[in-house]
Image (cartoon, rainbow, N blue to C red):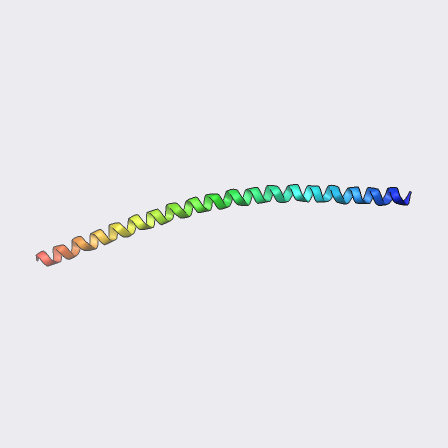
Length: 70
């Protein structure tokens, strides 16, 4: 009887660990997906920043050229 109670308690703990493991796997997958999205977003923002920087530099070059013409 004591062994059955101990066995039932152990089985319950194992079931809880399995449930926790499944929950952590799901959470881990969500975090990985979120990280992938953030990495993609970061790459897009870096690209936009570089494009904006190039445009500003181009405008500055044109403005300096216009100043020199006057």
